[in-house]
Length: 168
Image 1 (tube, rainbow, N blue to C red):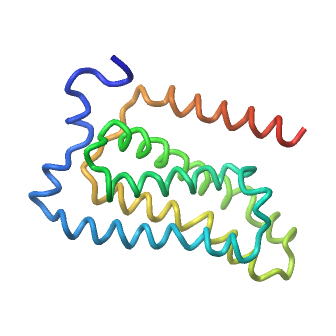
Image 2: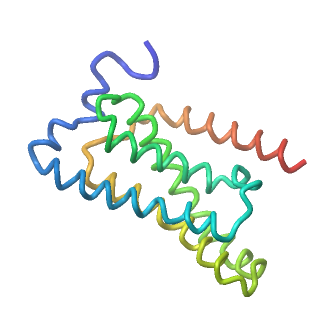
Image 3: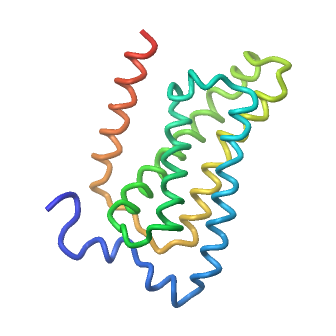
């Protein structure tokens, strides 16, 4: 049966409502969000080393947010995948933005010093994916499912395991 009850996915992800309201306008907004989310990839390629790309949770969130928008734009028939990506992206971006801006920003600014490219990249990668995700959430008729906290906890454990193995 999986994580969804029979017929539940249609109440959690409702594109019919969106089509009636302003479907093409929402797609235009999603394309704009997709362009926003590409900016951190560009700055990453310009100023950072790719060998460390998978280390920070921020980049995992960036990839999940990108996939989320790709599914919303091109693969609307995959409602279960859309809902799962939406849920994880929504929560992961919240975590990234709160943790980075409240605890890590000033320390990382000291660490990168006068490297303006890295300063810009850090600000963009910790802001634009969240903005794009929350704009998409605002225009979408998708609801979070309470029991998905288990999935989010599992993803956090997977990342923690990865981080522990990578950094030790």
